[in-house]
Image (tube, rainbow, N blue to C red; front, side):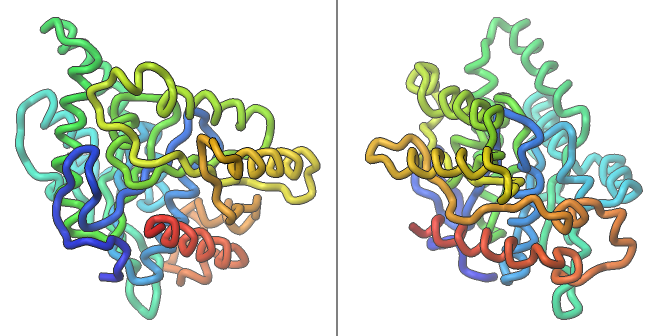
Length: 317
C-alpha cells in the first residue's frame, strides 16, 4: 500500500491521535456544493497513486454509491444487505456485532490503470439511512434517552469500524449528508481532516458559515460528549467559474480571512473549476466500458491530481 498514514496500522482512541490510514470527512450543511464530486476525485486520485482506498457513504441520497456502481450492481449490493444502513441498523437497533468488513463491497471502482481496476472498496448507502436515524431516535425516546445517547452510541460504532478500516486502508473517505445528522457529526469528530467544498458565491459562503459555527464554535461543541474536531475545517473552492466577478471577489475574501492570525478555517490552494469533464466523469452511464483514469477525467485529470497532492501534504502537515 502507498504510504499516506504515518503510523502503524491499528485503531485510534476517540479524539486521540490517528493511527494507520488517514480518515477524511467531506461535509457541508448546504447541498449541491460538490461534496460527492470531491469524494470521487479524492478516491480515484489517491487510488491512481497506489493507495488502498475505502469510501463510506453516509448520505441517504447515495450519490457517491451511484457514481461508483451502476444501478443493477447497486441494487444487488443492497439486496445482500451490504450497506452502511444495514451495518448501523444491525449495530444500533439489533445488537449485532458483525464487523464492518462484512458490509464492504470490494473493487467497486471500474476505472483502470495499467490494466487493473483502481483499488477502491466501499460501504454503500441506501435511501433508508434517513429513516433509520429517525427510528433510532424514536426508540431511544421510548427508553427516555436523548440525542447525546444517539451520538455516544454512533461514536462507539463508527470508531470500532474505523479501527478496522484504518488497519486495512491508506485512506478512508466519508461522504456526509447535507445538514448536521448524528452520523455526520460523529464522522467529523473522528476524521483527521474535514474538507468543506464551497462554491464561491453569496449563498454557499453563508451555508459554510452556518456549518462551521454549528460544528466548531457553538456551545454544543463544548457541552457535547463527543471528542472535539481534530483541526479547523478546510475549505475547498468548488465549481469555480474563473470569469465570474462574484466568484473572483468571494475567493479573495475567503483567502484573506483564512490568512488572518485568528482564522477559524484553512483553505486549499487548489480550486476545482466548473469543467464539463468533471460533470461527465460523475455519471457512470457515460462509461459503459471500463475507462482508464485519463480517459475518465480527460482535461480535468490535472485538477484531480493537484487536489490529491495538496490533500496528502496537508494530512502530513
